[in-house]
Length: 251
View (cartoon, rainbow, N blue to C red):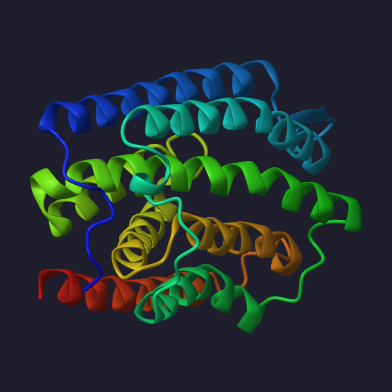
């Protein structure tokens, strides 16, 4: 088991970092709700409201601004509360962490790769998707695996900290993702907490997260074919990885 990334610090310092991160998440979610309210992604057609990929892509790209602001806030908090390295920003890549990094990607990408063939997005929309998901991965890893998990770990223990940060990570997707996707999001969070615990620095988690989100645009075909299979396989892969990580963390 990798040594804790956070050096010894007073409990008050950790509590303030976690509280500040929670405030960042709340403000970000309020900003997102406002953007979603004033930038709808449906257009009126003779048959009724219809989803517009172009409007969705434009809105998602625009959300990069609040995401990058939130990332900056998280980095500022980390810098003030021990330095970036103490909060996971290292180039380290422990060998034991690699299967967990890969499993996080596979849990979302493999089901689509097996049954999908792409085509839902144009080349321009794919490029926009990859561009927009970079700030997503940066902010979410800095906040949920960085500040929340590391900030709670020394007080709550690895298991409880992973559960709490991952549950908050799933709930944070309110409005952004349907409830049916929350279990996979929760298991992804657990898996990446354990990847961090086993020696992967946050930059590697960001890379894996970015691949997970970005490859969706290459593989999605827009149909509901094999929906149950894709969901079940993703849950199986992520569940197995989370269970293996839990055993290592508790061992």
